[in-house]
Length: 307
Image (cartoon, rainbow, N blue to C red):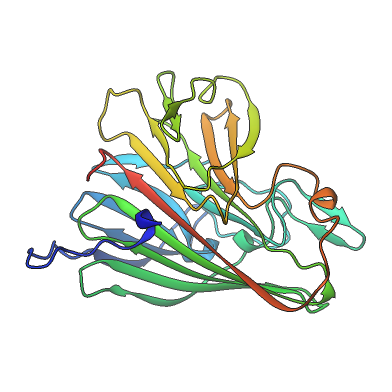
């Protein structure tokens, strides 16, 4: 999928100004002490990465315009064991043992949206590449006493001269004669000023006037395998307030939308599984002995589109 390959400068063309990378920590508030990796580029993009929340995305700004949604609990580090915590920031990774609402099966309880977003990442690289792009790599692991485990190897790249974020994930699951699925849902959270009365949403170049809405709703539909983008704009008043999401519709064949009117939250959620109960989705799944892996790729774009 071309959107998710890091752009390279044309042969003979001058290199763009390299990205700027900083490793910081929050001081005060609910995030106190949490790690933060900040990336800025020459296109006017500023990206906050949260290693203590699975290397997910906090706030992203394009030429000063904010993208994301922050609830009352802010961007506090995840706390394993909590069953229902706010998914603040622009992106929260849901999975890989479970997605959506909490479920109890026998002696095991699966938390809201699964366990991976509740884990701290081990950052293995945070540096600039030869073309000036920023590359951040991290691993995140989750396991059970019975021998099940899930490992996320994540690569985030930000090109030096384009308002884009590229995310490449490889997920490995290991099991010992238990059903050990790889379930993924990428929770993209949008709020004001992008989301408002004039918001326009396109899916595969088709305007979807029913999606912005004013009432609470959740809807799930098949995603197109070719990966056409979801586009969101404020209606045209501010050219900075444009957002695009591309993803591989073969590895993430379902596209879910969620609207919460109280708080002005609108979510775009590519997923591996339909919106049905867990026991139905895994009814015919075979126990895993050994390991399996899957790859997922997303590209998030901001502002006016470029060729």
